[in-house]
Picture 1 (cartoon, protein in one colour):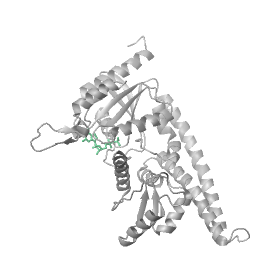
Picture 2: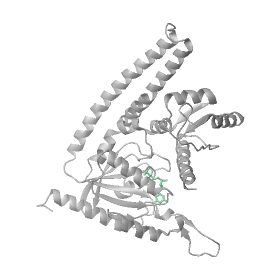
Picture 3: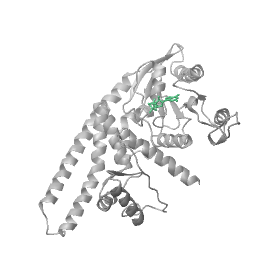
Picture 4: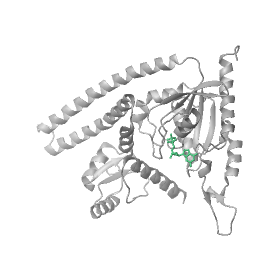
Length: 372
Ligand code: GDP
């Protein structure tokens, strides 16, 4: 069943996110519903089932693969008597753990407060209701009012701080002159940092976890005497919290202002087509979808082979399509120059470099027509 397959892939990703945040997952619960329950996201029977499991196995946290509304969060917490984390909260947590520069830390902190604010409000209304509403203004309410004011002040402060850093970064970008700018884009964990390292011979943090890259790195790269600037950007992901899209403006500006995009795809991942769609969707949202682009299909060394039987010596690949067939299909289908590589083994690097060179050169001579 295709829906079930998708569901499993989504939960695989959620589990990977949880692992990245430092948790280990013991059990998965799924439910078929036309739309989430307004009060508790899952239905009451499912909630009961989760509650029992959590109690019996002394589970500390339940994670939901969607952003829960403030009231759903509150209701679930009350019903399941366990810590509840939603997808947004989980991703924010990972970003918080991994933010290295003060810019990234400021961005994450802002996103976290923006996530928190409406959830405090709900807690407050909940308290108010318990106290009987009007005429029952107790100290709890004042406390939360104060908290909310503090958070709002903090949000304004962080926004001001980001604005001034954004200005600085814009100036920095302008000062980089007319060198051609290339940005690596792609779903998270596809190998962008690895490729950046291989191309620029620098050491960028690469790790098999989601969002290893939070901050933008810019390196000068030279291919065939032609220098250009290469930027590594934060990995895109399905359902990236809107609070983050907003606050990672500068990171996305690098993409928006790039002359050429290198779209890296992990071809060994079972849902790589979905990843391509997610990335293109984000590019569309920031109005960068019409830039020149090179498609780099990475991890060909890890392309999964699935042997049908013991004496079947020609292994069939994912969905029974061989890597070669995939290559042909994508080469024919893609309207962008396309190359298949392994960033890890530097396989097909000459071919990739030639493609990059040709594109950068084309942009370069359109900019400097007389001194090529
Ligand atoms: P990023 O999140 O897109 O920057 O991805 P990274 O560069 O951090 O790589 C994510 C993981 O994929 C790391 O464990 C890399 O070692 C691994 N990786 C990168 N390129 C390749 C490749 O060509 N083949 C294989 N098998 N693994 C790769």
